[in-house]
Picture 1 (cartoon, rainbow, N blue to C red):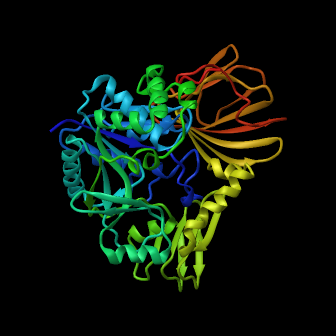
Picture 2: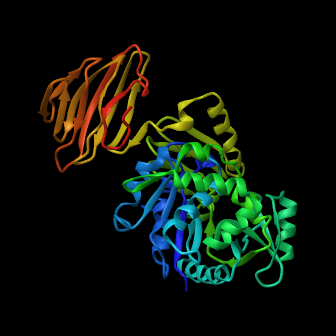
Picture 3: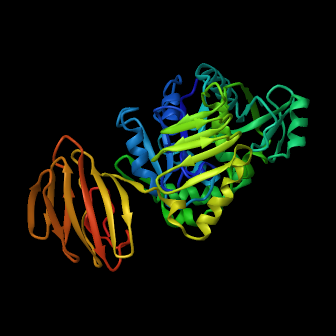
Length: 469
């Protein structure tokens, strides 16, 4: 059998899982079911396949470092590549870019296995079996989609109508309840999983026929792209000219080479809080509970506390999710409508759409503890051996107090070490850098004050992560 090239699409924001999922820390990076994130689970799953090449992950620029941090250690350091999208153009250009990148080094009969990073699949052996079946069809020139055997009349998924064998008769949009029930009654409708398999050659030929402008733009974007260690950065100019479309609309619904494999995988895209409730372990009252939670006369609820105690009395079929900066309360049956709140947050340009109070950086993270007009307090954690950029601020002064670990400080022309309970002051306009020379995490408290405290008031002179101005 030909080699299988897994392509893991790790973009998107998972807006229906707000307030846990945010633009800069989306659903695929979250630990929703166990101690591994959905992205990590997907990487481990493809690693168990036979005749498989190192995975290729497709992510946005802003997620590159946290994605790498989650994947490192799961596969050998030289065993994967992260393809960086400079702009978002939906799934069809993302897949095009991945295929064109693979085509540089792999033969035309290489089988591309395209998987979203945020799906839950509990039947691992069944997954391996159905991938083998799909690979055989793909090797014979088919573009294969995976149809999930429906367990209930779901209105949040698209459907595939199956004909004889692997024949696909039609794709259907997300239906209303009555239509979904009629699909289940007919017995030949399957949930559209968003997973696909095809060879490099078949994909390129069909895209040349059906979406030549898209293929041309993404081919140019790869040819003009640049490698940066584990990352390969697609060219932004070429990708910016690319039409935006989903792989379903651009290819799957138009090609006459489509085929489907039926898959019983215990699958979920965890596309809403209700979907998470369905697949999670429950207590004797039907509740899914995580964190510091007290329940009284509460049943069939999802209660999640991230930062403080959450107590409920007399709730039924409800959703309560608490984070450090937001609380969501809604009937579980209306969890799909969370996207309306996210839309409002985005239109009003509120930070709760984009960020948590804890923000992950390639060197570690920071947590906003207090935020006011002219001062701000943060807790900063720096990983062992890591360092921030050499930088300067125009409008803010900074006071650093080491809580634990050892800090190497660059403050203007001085370089010195600070230990627990020691501090330093960084005036505005002075170049500075924070490093962790030790083998334990460095934690410190930073107090900022000044006329402007935005994160865009950073002028970088040197940076280990390619973020210089």
